[in-house]
Length: 367
Image (cartoon, rainbow, N blue to C red; front, side, top):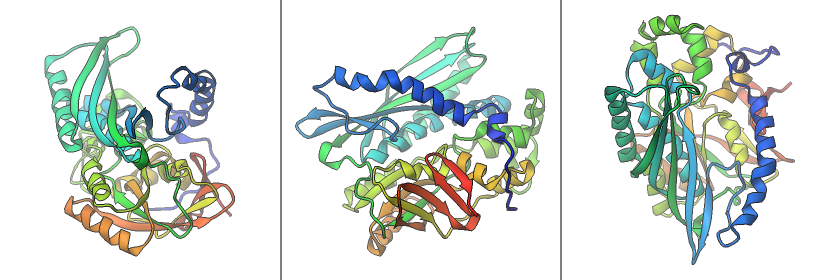
């Protein structure tokens, strides 16, 4: 992969996704939403809004974890290929992978399909993917909603919401992360379900007819079409992570690497820590191809994409690394020690190999 440094405006923003605009809009929304915690004093929440999932304290040591997420514009790739049977896996994955970050076992999901049309074959394929995702994530699909809103949506939007169970004394928000801890990365299966707007623009072109043609082009370096490479389902980490927790491995924090990339490590609750990603884990060819073709800066690549690491575990030392690695191998999930935790003022992620510093959800090039 060539290294690209750029002070140009974000290519992600130019492709239609404004991170800064989203942050400002979220802040405006939270001004009204955060005070609602006071409306349900009998069932307090265990985490701040902005963590991967939250937990309702039901009393008697019992908690219900919950969260919601969707597949975003990945569903456009399904539309380009006329292949909808895996997109449901992504919907389940984005929800259950968030839920396990608080130490909860996912239990059940509901789905929401907003659409401008209905089609028996397409909806059957979406159901097929949801069922496979549920099998992998060990959850039931307990309900859902189909909403025909042609005036709002042109196509299909797929979103899920998931609940899980956790004892309140087992809730994990990263409070016990300390300098000297090690960071273990679990490999992603590819692009997963983030950054598809930018990936499609670079790999497939601007216009929808152009994208439809190029999505079917065979790419030797992937051994399949560009569309199939982008459509590879998001890896679900429930089984290995639940086995690690049940085995008593002390996981200091669990971090789903989605939009924001390794900056998601900054979500853990411990303060005055620096996450040093070194050595940088292997980067799959799809990300190299996107960066080189689109001349995307290192900062934006690591901010938008998972770059080959879909989930991170923070552990105390070598013994825990060996235990984690053994379980990951059992579940055929590639696993690497990718860094360590150091003391700092504030909170940041550092990638020395690319001279990047990440604060909040944004990477910048360091001198």
